[in-house]
Image (cartoon, rainbow, N blue to C red; front, side):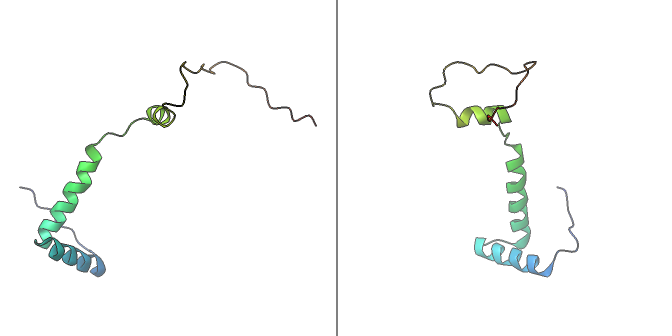
Amino acid sequence: MTQVIVCNIEDDINVLLKVRATQHGWSMEEEVRQILRSAVSNVRQTRPGLGSSIAARFEGIGLTVPLAELHGNTIEPMDFGS
């Protein structure tokens, strides 16, 4: 098993780690292991891409045809009649 040594931990962080470990009923080392496990398990979950997120947000609002692409089209500025 690998060892990791973390130096220069602020005193208040050290106290809070001890408090959390006591609340969970395990050692401070185990508390740090649990925190690290949680941190890296969240990294493994893949997040959807931007397009998928946008599609999910507007899903079910009645749009039944794909939107036209605007690549290569000229867009004219809006005329406010002034």
